[in-house]
Image (cartoon, rainbow, N blue to C red; front, side, top):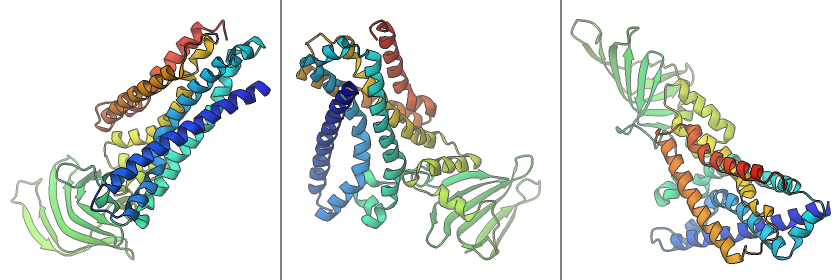
Length: 367
């Protein structure tokens, strides 16, 4: 227990120190950049920073785990405590288990930050800071409302029609620039319905259009029938479905995001981009454990004193930069539907896991 407390205490001390230093660096950079802008006030810059703090924490948590393992082991080696620990009969396997346990707690915190706290803060950003999207690009929404087809409209397939709209106003439950393309059982286009806007009627669960322009009988040999009228419109979708479709995906917690993806999938929308965001909550948490174990490889050489502070710092900087570049590249491939979501999020963690397994397997006799 004494040895376990020593290992855990040193690891947590370096982890917390690295976390504070990295958060301070990111904070200073963000605030300085904000203060240099002329179209925002000081209070708006500070509020924008506070909204982004959870995202900063998510970015630096894995690096803090890497630094914690690397520098805590380096400290124990330089003081000959690591050699004494293993000479006393405390196995390297036990050391790895200790790091695994403490880094798992950090991974849980990372998951809560990524999957719950950050979405909650994002959902409140309009209350905290007005016109946040217009003034700060980093606070822009992510979802169908900002990831649409080239026409600038949201499209989905439902039942026997394709449906498109430009915007849904959740405050008044109103859709704008609606186009409905209906088809028959042979998948032939039979009519096109264009509606400038329509408002949801909560009493009879229908949509009341401003005006309906319709071209019918397109699947028949006769001349198409063109008419204009005003009458209630019946849709397969409920009001809640449009709220989900138009949702800002950064405001959805883990399970709500999963429900959102299922709803989009039912509508015939390719959900690859959104699955990447969903899986990323998990991969960002798992990488904390992987980083902690990856930096623990020096325990198999406890007598070597060549792990100087400069070398450790250089390793952390180079490895962190390389990881984020490669991981970001894979994630972008997944969002652009050029790579399966699972591969986009877990390829790099899997490669690191295999490397760790190989190193530990080769040194299994020392464990």
